[in-house]
Image 1 (cartoon, rainbow, N blue to C red):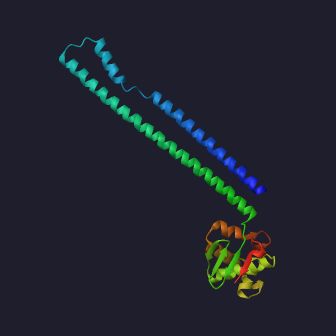
Image 2 (image 1 turned 120 degrees about the horizontal axis):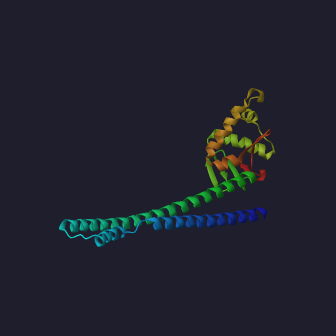
Length: 232
């Protein structure tokens, strides 16, 4: 019940963060767009200046009139170019908005996943069934199946038997059981290497790190209830 309430609260916080973030992005982009478009020069400013020159000056020669015509044509070209620039700026602003919104959504999603992973690491995986099949070299974890090497199956079987006895195994103990030697003749690093290979074979980091746990000063243990374990 507490976990459900906590999850609902986190979901509401995430939803609220998304809404606030989207509103902030829209507000910032709107302010930037208004500031940008307001400070852009008028498309007809050049033509207006040419017209003012024509009115304020007594231009009578053919060359002067021709020059004004050229200037007027240049002003028209400038206005068309500025109009196209406005369209390009508008498209870029829309594109920037989409990127910022996508980045915000991804960021919130990653934060949510990290919180979820932290909760799973604290509480462990809810394992209802863990079946080890020596014949198939596979382990069935709830509704997931993982293919293992024979050595990894044996390592997992040793951990399962220890979990049934509610025991923790050190690296030297794991190596001693699997090799049949005395613990004094085994090294901690050898057992740790077997655990690492088992985790690598499981592949899924979340599953491997949470299922096969290393408790400080105690040893390795499977984070699942003993009644869920079956070895074939």
